[in-house]
Amino acid sequence: ALMSTIHATTATQKTVDGPSNKDWRGGRGVNNNIIPSSTGAAKAVGKVIPSLNGKLTGLSFRVPTSDVSVVDLVARIEKEASYDEIKAAIKDAASSGPLKGIIEYTEDAVVSTDFVGHTASSIFDAKAGIQLNKNFVKLVSWYD
Image (cartoon, rainbow, N blue to C red; front, side):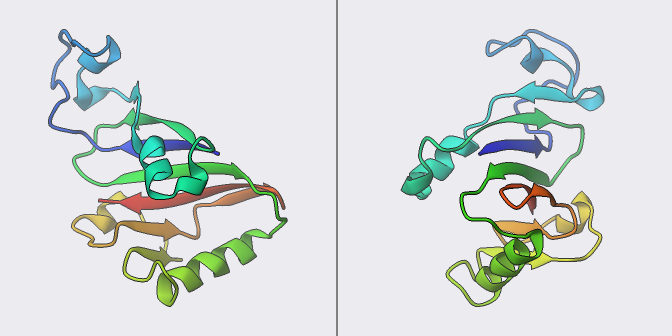
């Protein structure tokens, strides 16, 4: 699976262009740029869910917003499923399954500021995902 995090500004980013020890892009001003960067999120998922170790990689885009980030996950799934079936499984896990209290599910037409201060680790956005076919999906989830 491939993951992109569209990540809000962090305290380590520059407000104006300047030198960066990490990389050239990291030295660019955050207030007027979308900055491609690395992310440790994919590796972290592999540590938390060992069965996904080595099956997920990703990158991030730092964007000029002050809070709330979003994950865009593209996956090829082995077992065929419709997007409605995937949504139902996530909704069930969020409401009564093992992820209750950790993830939440929404079908509202949301934007990033709707999640400022949200306590869930991740909020699955049912309206933002898409499906190419029964084995290839894009899932979207917000976090603060």
